[in-house]
Length: 350
Ligand SMILES: *Cc1c(COP(=O)(O)O)cnc(C)c1O
Image (tube, rainbow, N blue to C red; front, side, top):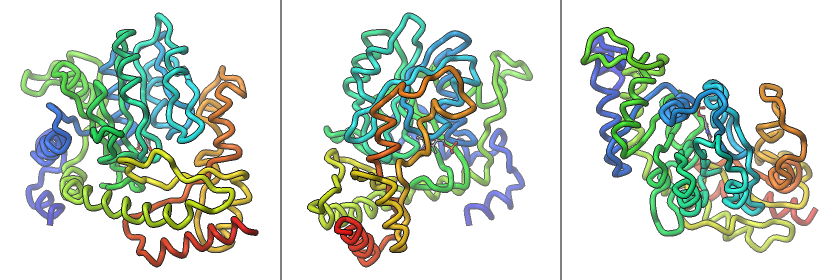
């Protein structure tokens, strides 16, 4: 229906239609923020944020080594330097003390990733950013409608929040991205960067540097429908994650997430003694599991250089040894969850 409506209109480009603008208004309303800007991916959303923050050559942005590459690629694209701070051992989110220790006169921004749907400590990170005059960017790609312990929506504390509509997120339009902000000047800068620095109300003048990161009308139409479903998606994930945690909370050798309030459960992260053994054991019983989530911390990828091994020991230990990620889905039935719990029980005692 939504897609046919766009095809019938014969306007497929987001610059000329009204689906992308309507999606932005609906997203801003969902989160209670002043403005939303749509774009072509979560990585693009982060690029809008980093560009709007004024990150350029020599500037530093502090973030986590455990995330999607899309969190850091925009910083590199702007000629900035990514400074990796270590994470908390229990949930893999940024350790605010490590962030504060990494601040230098060149620091421009902090990107807080709400890893797996669990809240980073935005209260302390906000306070650190305010004290040092830094922009706080929240990467909410894995945390649609997640909340912090105080019940505050993730994506409402940062100067800018970024979301992804990629295939494997809570909701998808294939690919797509959204940013949120309450600051009209940040919104204008992001909007210009998304469309070649071109304010179409003004004429064909390129005021600022920009790329083409526009969301198409087809994607926006799908995303608008998805946005009406996200609350249900998160609610079903919460119910099934709670069922799993109740079932496996007492198993030997497994630690379930302790910070569960408001979690959006993009995946269910567990802590184990040997994630390779657990992943293999689950795989043998037909349950998909990712040891460590990543193969290596972001800084150990060939695309980046100048970061020594051992830079963030807690992140390396999580990836290499203790973190076990169970892909999660709102379509899991109680039966599916019980079978996953059973498989975990078997591996625990094997
Ligand atoms: C998926 C993801 C991104 C990148 O989003 P894309 O839409 O794939 O570009 C960025 N950050 C995090 C935390 C993600 O999970």
